[in-house]
Length: 612
Ligand SMILES: [Zn+2]
Ligand SMILES: [Zn+2]
Image 1 (cartoon, rainbow, N blue to C red):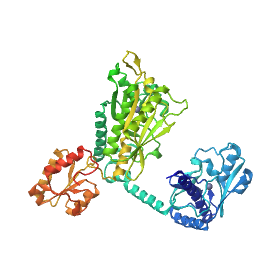
Image 2 (image 1 turned 30 degrees about the horizontal axis):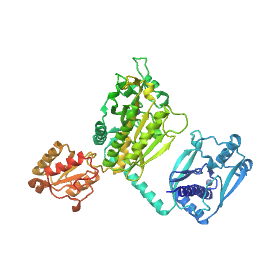
Image 3 (image 1 turned 180 degrees about the vertical axis):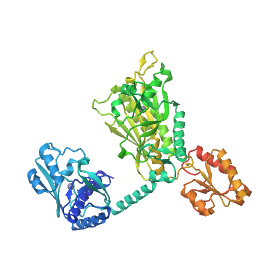
Image 4 (image 1 turned 45 degrees about the vertical axis):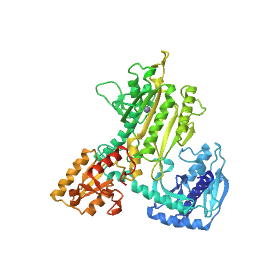
């Protein structure tokens, strides 16, 4: 999408907010209007309507909007002095409040209100406001708009929700009407289809249906509990991450989940985590907290003995939980939790090792996301700008940033440089992964850190016998395992590749005769012994129903066990995509061939079936 297109779409969506307000004013003349900004994919308007609107009113408002669009009213701009505006908007309580704020303070104060939607200019001093009129409706506004009401593309009203005036719960609760708007009907249709598909794949819905994780009111919000099936996925993801890191020279360490607060006062993080969880001790005068991160703890393992330049890099990895208190309203399934498990790691490196360390990590990311997950990703290089808010030697910063960029170029990854987005303690690299629906998720991160080594006085002896500071490299390949699981569930729509599937093989005996059942369980024992996860469908349902049930449970392979299979010791596995269709059948295989193929598919963490 080019920039001109974006601007035009913005004007369309913004104009749609006016058109919706026009329709509402026509339908409910006593309505008081709040504000109506553009949001992602569309727009909303906050309104105070008596009696309150319900979802059933949306089609009526849509129909009225279509009349306004058809009338093709031009958007006419004018300005009004503040006192004139106060007179004009008399009775429009919320608009009057905004105009009065402009008059008295030169601003509308509330942070959540975009000044442009209320007609104010960027100047602090305001003596007039912008006004736009389309047919019967006039609003405080600064634009931009389309030329006339017919030029707004395609739209749909989506939902109603409550919204406090100016986001403050002490204020009146208005109703927020959300709509989406696109340049063409086709784009709108595609967006609505995507929403439908996203709903079907919602990890909260699939997590329940597939028995992967649960929440308990007794345990608390944002604290997911993983079932045996969900734990398989978690463990497989974590094993993969640790295996990759192990090959990269990382060693496992383990730390407790609470600490004296002094650790975080020393690291400088204490004040940065107001959402920390405190822990009370009755025995000790010390103040404790649950750990919101792992790095400060890992520095204490590094600092526990003298280090030489020959030992570097020293790399620790640990998959462990960090605790951050999220607001109750902000927690969502596995995407936003209070206890997040990270595949965290910290490497302590010499400055001359930064480049090779980054190359090694970029390669891990490539194996993980390209070879195994088969998901496209882009890289954000968050670098410093010229301001002086950064800590550490400018020469070290520059050479580190140059090294990072050099590696990205060398490996041919798609990246953007985000100047000014580095943290104060070092440049940062974010990996943004695109899922099957084209949605982007930030998963892995690498962070260079010049500050914690300083704060904790970390040292090693260099080749001249001098004590010098190492640089710390923080890294998470998956990020939060909970969030990553949510991404995986939605990306695969629950149809996991073999290595991640909680149940890999479903055995479906055609009847419950002793011979068939004995053979089925014998086969299950063989598969289990080969490290595969197999289950028997021992229900009395027909084979057709058993095949359908396995399909619904998204089990990768189904084996029908009948007299013929028992006698020949061969099988015709069915692939997950299949229901009762013969073209999903794979040719006949012996048990040994089947086991060998599947073991290979798991070992490769293959995104595709090796039998198809
Ligand atoms: Zn406007
Ligand atoms: Zn860290």
